[in-house]
Amino acid sequence: MVQLETEEDGWSARVDDVSMGHNGYRVWTATLLSTAIGVVFGGIQALLILTLRGPYNDGVEWPMILVGVIAAILLAAGLVPPYFEIAKRSGRIVGISLSSAIDLLLLFGPIDRGM
Image (tube, rainbow, N blue to C red; front, side, top):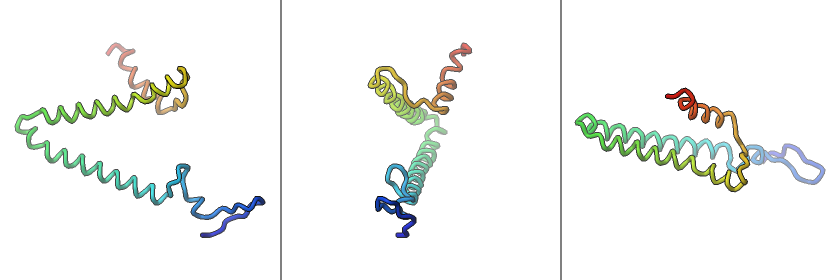
């Protein structure tokens, strides 16, 4: 460990203190974990494409519909927790970001235009 600086209260900053994120993971660990998750998810997607292509070409459509239904259920389940947060805070919305605002615009945009 390399000592960077000593403060008056006796606490000293070290290199491994600096390289940790706000949640306690080191940068290398977080990068490795993220890459591993990406590889696993990519492998699952490639496996689904390769295994479902044959039956789909033969006219069997229910596996594709099943994958779509599972995706829709997981997407809807991901939208539920913010409503519990809003209820917990008595209707006060905390943490709306630009990304959330764009998502809402894209969600309600077609409704406003009568599509």
